Image 1 (cartoon, helix red, strand yellow):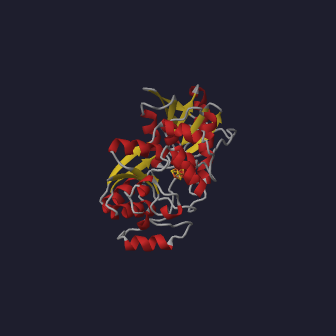
Image 2: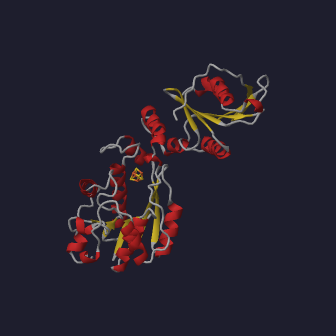
Image 3: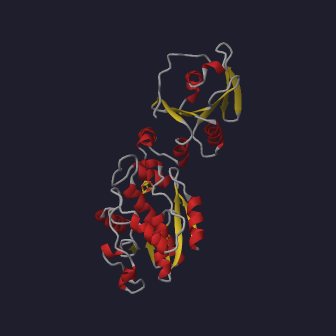
Length: 329
Ligand code: SF4
């Protein structure tokens, strides 16, 4: 008998997998990668240690459409955890049907997190994902209504757990008992939960009615400067960001954009994105200078390379103290 488990690679999903394995269930892990959250490597390592198959699911633009307009709202930052869990469970249900599995499981614990794991929220997620009766939470099953696999005797309810609340000590003790050696730190690892990141996300959703994965990946590639409702500039903070901006510029799914690369001095690369971006080359160059160490350029001879489509030109840039600070974050 097979089950699909939402598998982040965190301790709870590892424990839930082990509990099911102890009942003879063949567990298949389903790991989600979003532009805000990628722990697929850690999940792969944990899945290998447990001896389970792992499927990595990369979310597409439809996921962004959902989190831009969450039916059940946001948590403390830009994290729409209830909608996100519903979507994950919905995808897991599709996988369950495809793989001939009998149910879906998660490592959720009733009351462990305020946004998404309160009892009424767990019931809501189960119902809205179409998994009513087929969503098993092995760590908290005793505190929840019996599911179909338990009722039908496919799972022994007495060997499932009834944990509630936040206590970490008992799950670590259980991990030792079940032979899980590597205990990962307790963290969602999701940028959407960071209040410092939320401003960038909400700025994107405010100005872009149909956000794409490309837009979301841009958020992770440097400072975000909103120059007008239709134009944004992203300025690399380090070498990795600058390289990433070049990659994003060259991607087939990129939006109309212009890449600005310092030519005669060492400074940050910038990507101008949006409508009529050509009009923003001059302020874009001035902003590059603003974020460059003044000792690193000659203000009378500073030039940048302007890349637009397949054409490139080198133009002078002028320091302009009057460019406003457009920083989103
Ligand atoms: S923390 Fe992030 S990945 Fe996890 S449920 Fe919330 S929004 Fe989704």
